[in-house]
Image (cartoon, rainbow, N blue to C red; front, side):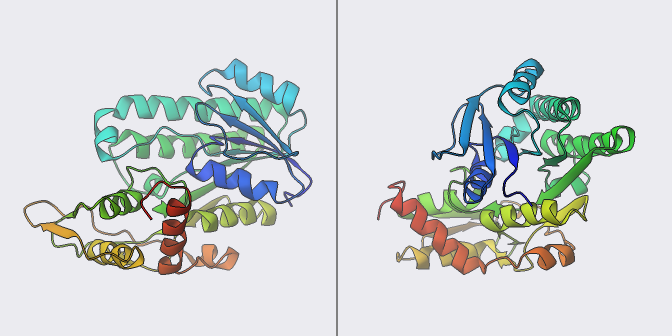
Length: 296
């Protein structure tokens, strides 16, 4: 169990990382939170925060040596990511950065004798792709397998798909739609809007990850929901939750994007049943409004 342990979290001010820290703070775990630019948005007696660049292996070694000696678990959520345009224009930078920080985390955790390492991967790692983000996740997974074999390390690889919820990045699909709707702009959807996606709430992702570690039975876990929704229906649902008229514009001249990928969620649903999408979207809208990030 995580309770009572020392847990190091990278990317602790990011979307998934901040929710990992928040969840851990609700236990008796001692949390050492590492971040590059934005710290976690909360404080607690059992929380220590350290700004550092994970590309600097010596900085990470120093934190593990002096601030988190005998750490039980490292949860690595940090990654260079971005929207489709950023991934297209920075594929080499993303690949190099994510591979470098993944390698540093594995090396430092190994040398510090950390018992368990969680490398948050992506559902994209299981799909053939030529973008730097997906490739970096695939290669880090391969690296993890070699570290398991040679060093006997206990490494977990959760693969989230289409995560959403409070504190999501504004350039991702759901917060981007919310922002446009509340600012009076149309939501532009490529194609006829019939393309479907499966979204999973960030808190359900964190619960599944921590259960994965606690039960210690899975090396790789697909973290996804069985519920699907079309992009058009997603926009309409958000308009309804925001109590505004539908503001949706279809562009049939544009491609609809990749077809949905089937996921085996059998093990995921044994660990946690994800909340219904409409419930999760309602929670997300409420959070953005409560933090004054959107017009009420």
